[in-house]
Image (tube, rainbow, N blue to C red; front, side, top):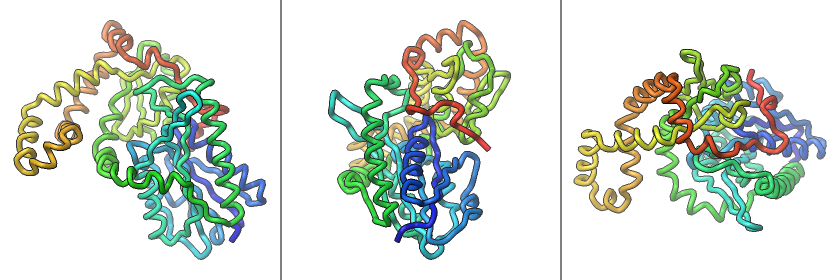
Length: 358
């Protein structure tokens, strides 16, 4: 059945999910389905209660973080009201795609669609579509931002896929992209890592940003953070544990002052891994579950170092935040940060002014 109207909610760091939401909305409008596109920045599921309900289409567009759903989007989905008759939904998660010559390399969803799918089905919504969309990878802390000649073909391909997807659901047909089934075994295999990221990893990644002396205090990173995780402390940006590592602040900074301190991260992880409590836990796990522990030591090592030492990370990061006020220390971490030398990335047609926060 064709929907009378559609409500699309999105969370976006560098614009990939935002541009996908706009494209889907444009296609639905072309099929005479009135569509609203709304950011969930600082909003809860109650926002959907204010919309007209019944025989409608609910769309959720968001990036894939740590093989899962960003925590802010997960909270939004959890607080959505139970469905009324005729209410259906689609999920569109952007994930880290890339390109080698003319070969397009897909990203991995993990739990990014599985968890929202289960929640919304339990709430009574009917399924209209699932689309993992391989937009350009934007994790600038790990790799340089892609050049336009690399990401433009990726975006053009994704636009065609998203348009075809939106056309199918606008016509009242259910459309599940083949990647949903092709990658399902791998997605299921990665569930433990997705859980570990939600429980621990997202807190540690929130402590991997700092502002160099190039920062002029313009407050743009504070004003545009989708979850309000960036605060000004002692006149400098400070990233709290609620940071989603969406990379928005790093990519919209007019001075390119936001960096990842790779040297600091390497030293901190080395120190934390060498703490006596960490070593003791390694020994205990090796005795309790020797076969599992010995076969997959690296995820256990990361999990132990993370869970036990989150307070250590917080204290050390705060000290680090105080130390980088000194110019020579700031320069040391700036010039040893790979992001200082890497290009930034924002989705085509997207700029800082497109990220509004209400």
